[in-house]
Image (tube, rainbow, N blue to C red):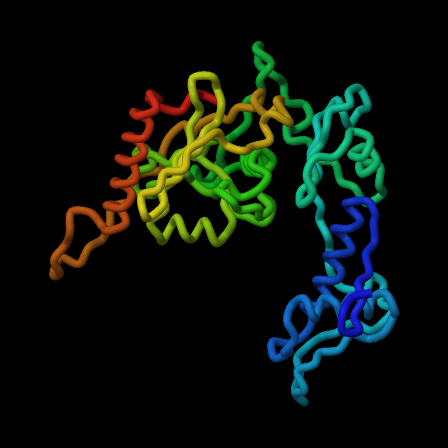
Length: 317
């Protein structure tokens, strides 16, 4: 019981089932039209009651021409949604040869027994990060492609997946947005006209940012850098528009999954041909665009920061 004639109901269950149930409630709550006046928590509460009681969930816009598509009570599944839950573990733990901890997106660290239970579910799909049949090098590392064959800007599936596993959440300080609901970002801006200038598609050259923080960096004055120190530890550094510098070791899952350090990515073998800009010669031109000047300033700032930390460049990965 709570105040004012309200009450709260809770259910304790496996973390993956909580994620699935929450996704079903959210999908039904979002089925209303844009004119529904309830807040998101109010709609979620009403949707949860409808799912538990088998009654119809209604849009409360009051419009005769309501465009909401509300499923009928008893529909199986109750809403047209698919909940994808990302769970990471090492190969030996999955096979039962080790009991190393695992990681569930949106929850955190889980036990080896729990991850094997999840892998045994009939709806579980197991995808290895390193494709089956890939032969390791003599030092035990695996070399995977860093980018799509047709576009050095786009990370390969393997690199994109490793970034999300490694970072877990958005790398911006204080942000806990899931890495699987965020963007893969080039830390040093990728120069599409001259890729050799920087911004290479690599594990050190990219990290995960939520859509908001990605946009704040791209269109604002936030500056970030990422590099490995002489001990191989990944570091991130952020400079706010006010000049506040936030430094420290990156909060990643590399310690949880040290096998990630055995995966290395082949750098682009060549850059795409230079694409000259077509300019209107009747108008005055500048030597570089504003965006190019902004990226040059950021490269210079990152270079100064690394010299201050006695880091000449990123260690190989």
